[in-house]
Length: 85
Image (cartoon, rainbow, N blue to C red; front, side, top):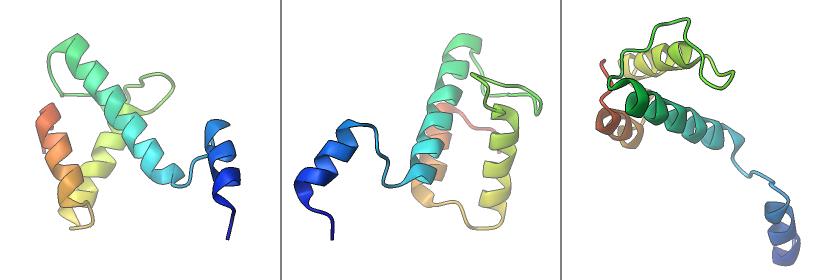
């Protein structure tokens, strides 16, 4: 097991222990920015925000919900932003 002091050093350098969760959070933040700027959550499939294919990401979230693999926490957070399922 990695010593706690080394863990803190790595975290201070930007180390991510869960890069997939971090990416999801970043994409949600991009969606929140889109909604704040545009006033809605209707993102076109081809739309990109900060070089992220936000429209494709939203479709992936819809498919994950449809397949019952999107957590209730993530569904709730997307609902709070105004996600249109």
